Amino acid sequence: MVEMNRRLRGDVSLNSPLSEGEHSAGWQDRLVDDSVSPETRLAENEEFVKRRNALIETLPVLSGRERRIFEARRLADDPITLGELGDEFCISRERVRQIEMRAFEKVRKAVRARVAETEGSRKLPAIAGASADVARLASSEQC
Image 1 (spheres, rainbow, N blue to C red):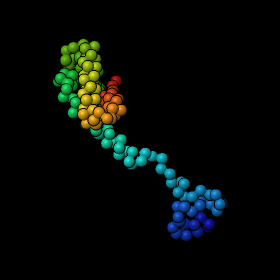
Image 2: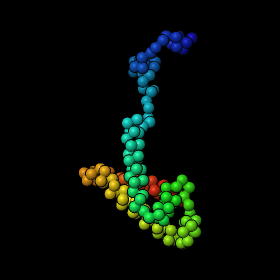
Image 3: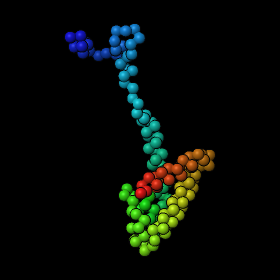
């Protein structure tokens, strides 16, 4: 009956205590949101988009074969094996691995240069973060 009376009482302030005690917590104390703030989420998303665009803009530094291997091994959801790429290009798996590593280094250098060009020389820590992000983006799809 007491519970029903509380419900029928109408609107209640979030600052009102949960119980009758003097040091009782208020309703607002139960409404804590532990998720990431929208501002943080937006900033992270903008940074990711900026770095992804830098990666996409630097892919033309690769030759056709390097780009095919890099995209198939590092950017695909389901990476192609070294053997399958070797058969496609009539080269050994080891040679595919070497081309992949060389392409990765080319992309990393190009992204660093692109981010440095965009950010300016005063933000060097962001450049290091960008290369780590490229490494994360590129290597997250490895076998």
